Amino acid sequence: MMFKKKKKKGQLSVLQGAIMGFAVIAIVAVVAFLMVDKVAEQTTPGSSAGNATIKVNEAMTSIVDWLPIVSIVLIGGILIFLLFRYFGGAGKGTA
Image 1 (tube, rainbow, N blue to C red):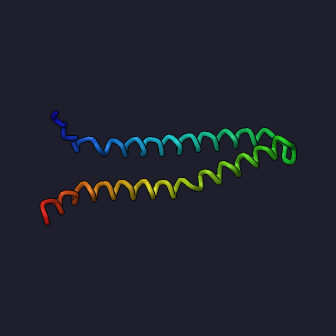
Image 2 (cartoon, rainbow, N blue to C red; image 1 turned 60 degrees about the horizontal axis):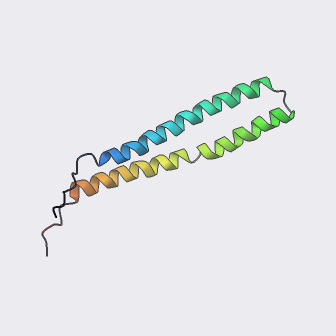
């Protein structure tokens, strides 16, 4: 039985999906903030709708606060991946 060797080409495409997902999350968050802002403009302050938009805005802000941390982890993962890929063969053949 012959085993096929995995090609190293295209391994970075796994990280491309993570980057695209991060970009989609950022775009959706911006659109959501714009929508909540437009709803907040149309409500009267102190009403239940006005208070609800304030609560939604606070909740979205707490979620979006994690985006810089996620981006740092994502960039770190890419750098570690590239370092392992570049230096991965350095220790082969040593006893």
